[in-house]
Image (tube, rainbow, N blue to C red; front, side, top):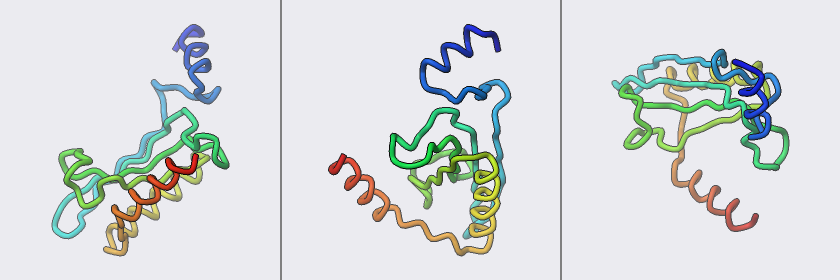
Length: 121
């Protein structure tokens, strides 16, 4: 990546060391309730804390076997982290919980919390 690209990304708010061509990206296939899912953890580069607490640059999401978010039991699931180390640990923990059947995702509760955050900003 050249300096012009780095300056452009910096102006958009990306982390100084973010490199979109060489970014952190973990993918793990997991069987759960007879279906295959992909646990994906990536470096977003851009702070997704939106000014609330520590910067959040990494995110884990769960996709169905066709890489769809919609229609999956884990629609809207996401977990965000500040550091690469936290993201690696979180990724492994989510894979383990999914494999063991212990990951319980409450989509409606999550949507309610998102609505509250939007209302009280």
